[in-house]
Length: 394
Ligand code: PXP
Image 1 (cartoon, rainbow, N blue to C red):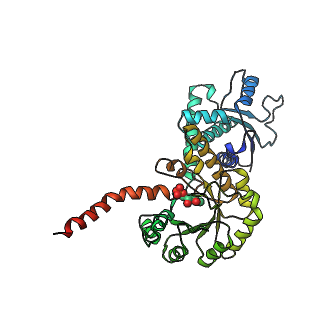
Image 2 (image 1 turned 120 degrees about the horizontal axis):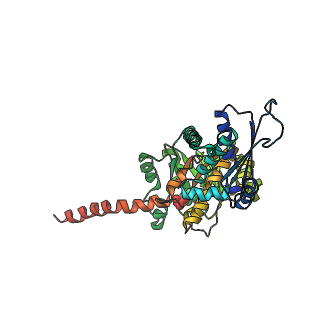
Image 3 (image 1 turned 120 degrees about the vertical axis):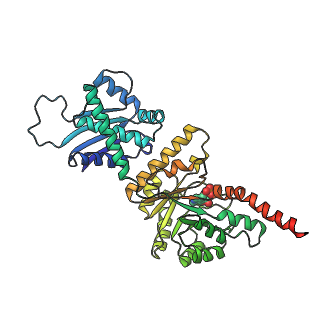
């Protein structure tokens, strides 16, 4: 299989791995799996140059196809040539069009890739209405079929119950108990329970970790810093997953992803210790290419993409940009063979967009769910107490 994808723009804006996967799949549908194809992602400035040079049109366009040996004087038909040619796509125009058509950039890019390849295979919408209809129908068929080949599992929801422990610790008594909260979350359908055992034990306590290990029926994901004492507890309790996070005493919650890139040795050592006991390790990282590659290099099984910047974005544009970074990072990580989770700051308004990314397996959500539970449970809690108060004197 020889599809080459090259990006001449900021790499993380677009997942080359995803484009390659789709293009290879399209070629397979036409029994052209062994043909060479080049796809180049460029910006509007370069696309304008191509558009002017080859079509005498000013301004950028979305996609241009250049069949192999186009314009050659000799007839190549008799040669056993397995070259299709080049497809060039402007990421700037693709992004603009995705907003215009209310699609993800990935969907738009897939459409442009299919459009470009169909041109190389002889389809041409400029030859008339009938040809245009034929080409559009084929594009729609390809995109629909490809969508059906994607995600096979629904996104999992793991619930972080640290916040229940925070309320307990505020009083220094025994309730509310995160162990009981975990059971309710599981009964409601959560696929896993997340707890963060911090060095300062500000919410989850050692007792919670040991008890939850006994009671959790789904999966226990233990978040922790790469700290000696905590590693010991992880080795003793054997969670289903350990997520390594950066930990600063002064922070209110985890701020920013783990810098795996500049601590490769230390993190690789921790991963080695844990995986030797069959505990898979996830690394909580920002959606940055060098952190993904470093996570792969140190032997992580999972990454958890930090969604905090996406959730904190204050404009639609900034949020769309952050979502695009997460989407691309997830695709790139998955193409390396890493499994991908995501979380931090996800709430009832910003979660659906992340859950729609098919390379993300699981979302880890805490604060927004516990916050809503306070209000959705408050009415009943007041009525229950009122009953006691009002009936006591009767
Ligand atoms: N993932 C990680 C690594 C976290 O540290 C946290 C916060 O404890 C979460 C997910 C959940 O974030 P939130 O409570 O904002 O949903």
